Picture 1 (cartoon, rainbow, N blue to C red):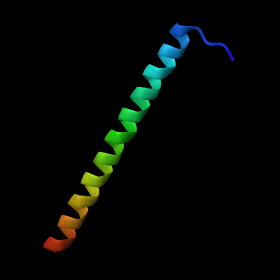
Picture 2 (picture 1 turned 45 degrees about the vertical axis):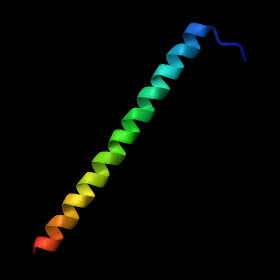
Picture 3 (picture 1 turned 120 degrees about the vertical axis):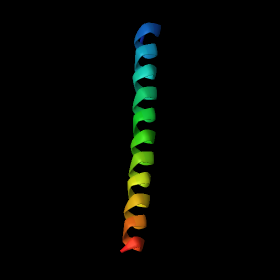
Length: 43
């Protein structure tokens, strides 16, 4: 399959953004879980 360099560049950019977003989501989820655990201990 042939892709011109511009198309493959755009795909790489969008893949990089997707990876960064999923990493952020993982961090936010872990942070929320940490907060939840902290609240449980306070009760």
